[in-house]
Image (cartoon, rainbow, N blue to C red):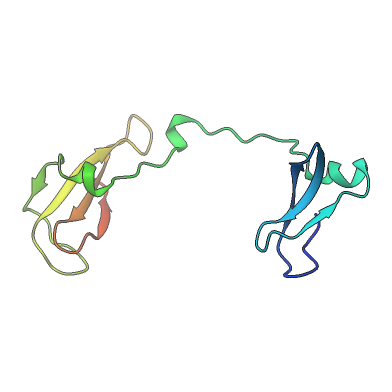
Length: 114
């Protein structure tokens, strides 16, 4: 891996004008590649694949509006007694699901296990 001589950022290979050059991810400085051996350092040899189980769930403000609300919990951060909630099977199928809560006042998210 090469680093930028100007700012120390990581140099990545990019195509420019029919040839491959190294460009800094921070400042945009470019330099020519000395040899194809030098370029082989940047080749990805292992591709990481994630299963559906490993993917992250992102709940945006738009998605929250459709979630049910409970008044049976207390927010650990602000003490408000109202939160959106949803349930996700985060562990094995023979174990109970995990309940997630998002405070309607401060937006803090926490989980609860059975």
